[in-house]
Length: 48
Image 1 (cartoon, helix red, strand yellow):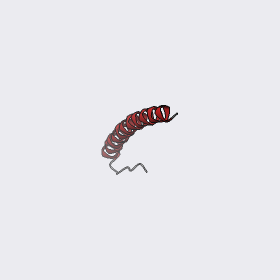
Image 2 (image 1 turned 90 degrees about the vertical axis):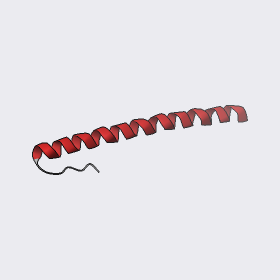
Image 3 (image 1 turned 60 degrees about the vertical axis):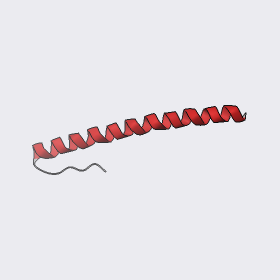
Image 4 (image 1 turned 135 degrees about the vertical axis):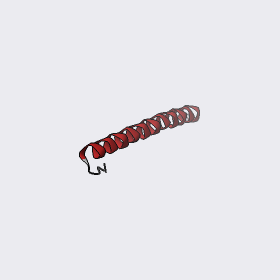
């Protein structure tokens, strides 16, 4: 059981790492869209 739990922890860490990278990419894309929209419309957008 302990060996399986260690394996599950490793998989969870790998999954969390992938999610973290995906989230960062999503935020970066959102920021770019917000900047583009603010430039086009002449006012600043902020996503909360």
